[in-house]
Length: 116
Image (cartoon, rainbow, N blue to C red; front, side):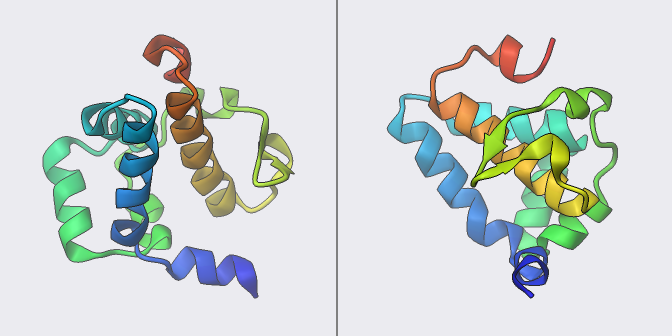
């Protein structure tokens, strides 16, 4: 099943793509890391350890210190799917992150991206 394949993908293999996408639009790695920290509760040291350990997305989100309580405010369409209608919690969390990175790349202000 396609979904299970995504869950087993290494977060470290996708992370550089998040950074590249943001930097192509004039944003920074620090902003990407801020978004990841906001969503998951990981601090910078923990994030670096996750990347070094090459954990998969299932472990990345499963061991996240705390998914932000405002994450449910992330709505819209990503990859042809409406986020708020995704039933699988892990897939929804992955799409939350995708959506936040897209918003960053589209030039949205950090205050709005972080739902403050």
